[in-house]
Length: 202
Image (cartoon, rainbow, N blue to C red; front, side, top):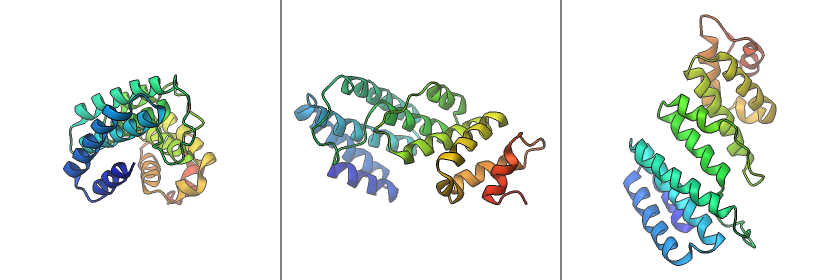
């Protein structure tokens, strides 16, 4: 978990090679020594997701996607194992968290159709933090907007407004999505109250 935190810090400093190498090294060690326990599998999964994110931010989406598929298969195996006695200090790692991250990476790499396909029919785990749920809604809205589906974008934004209004109001990406929709020649129905709420209706 310490290695995962350091890798996260490297990512924030744009030291992506260092972040990726550390996450892969630590994941290999955890896999050798602890992959048969739910605690070990959760830590391994978190490290694998971290490495995948570094690959994606380096421009290697294919490698990142492959690693995320591996992580998702591990999360399915984890779901059949006993729950850790104390998971507070472990990675948030389950089928929902992996799929949410896969949706995010697809949106960031301008693959909106793939993102919506991954998001379709998702059932979020109770362990999924509220902040991750809000990110998913925002990514879904972005993907719909990128595909020219204003109705789908407004629906996702409306859910986001109901579930996390304060977060949405101060998030630059949410504002950017709404502004893009507002500037369409034909504005989607239902957009105005969301735009007024964010102050981008001028």
